[in-house]
Amino acid sequence: MSIVKSNVTEQIIEYLKNNIENGNWKLGEKVPSENQLTEILGVSRASIRVAIQQLIAIGVLESFQGKGTYVKNTDINARSYNPNSITKEDCKDISKVLEFRRIVETEACYLAVPNIDEEIIEKLRNYLTIMSKNIGNPIEFIKADRLYHEEICKASGNQLLGKSLKDVFNKTEKSHKQINKIFGYNDGIYYHKAILRAIEDRDAERARQLMYEHLQQAIDRLEVD
Image 1 (cartoon, rainbow, N blue to C red):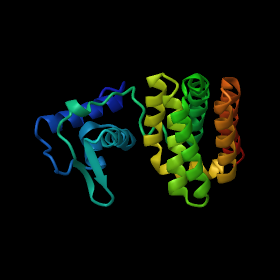
Image 2: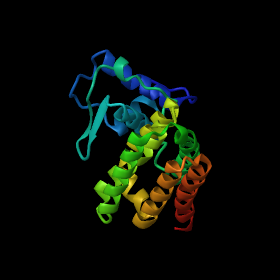
Image 3: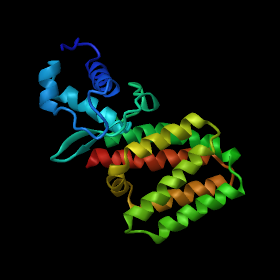
C-alpha cells in the first residue's frame, strides 16, 4: 500500500483504524512494529510513530516498552480521532504550553471574578492551604495547583476555556513536575495568594494582570534556562 504525501499521518491513522475495525487486529493483539508498518506503507518511521501516538492518546492502542504496541479498544467510533484536537505531541514543548495558558487563563481570570461566589472562594483558599502545606511535596502541591487554576477557569462561564485548559493539563501530566520547578514553590504561592486577594476584592483587572505576570514569569525563566 502506498500513501499519498499530503496528510500522511491522517492516512496512516485511517489504515490502522481500518485494520482494527475489520478484525485484522483483534483486541489484545500486537500490531505490526514501526519498521514493519514503514515497509508496508512506504512512509517514514517518524510518521508511523506520530500516528500510533495519536491512537494511544485516545485509548485505541497501548504501548509497552520492549514489547510493542497492542490493540486496547476496538470501539473506534466512540473514540474517533480528530486531527484538530489537542494531542500529547502538541504539548511536548513546555514553552508553547505556558504560552497557551497565559493567553487562556489571563482572560478566563478576568471573566471569572464577577462570577466567583463565596463557595468558590472557599475552595480556592483550601487549595492554597494545601499548596502551602506541601512545599517540597510536588505530587500534592501540583494537584492543588491544578485544581486552583481549573476552578478559576471554570468560573469564567465559558466552557471552551475550562475544557481546553483541562485537556492541556491532562496531556501534560508527565511534565507537571518540570513546570512546577519553573514556577517555584514560593513564587507559586505568592501569586496564588495575590490572585485570590484580587478576586476577593472583586478587582477583575488586577486579577487578570497578576495571572498574566504569574505565567509570563515562568515563560521568562524557561527562556533564560
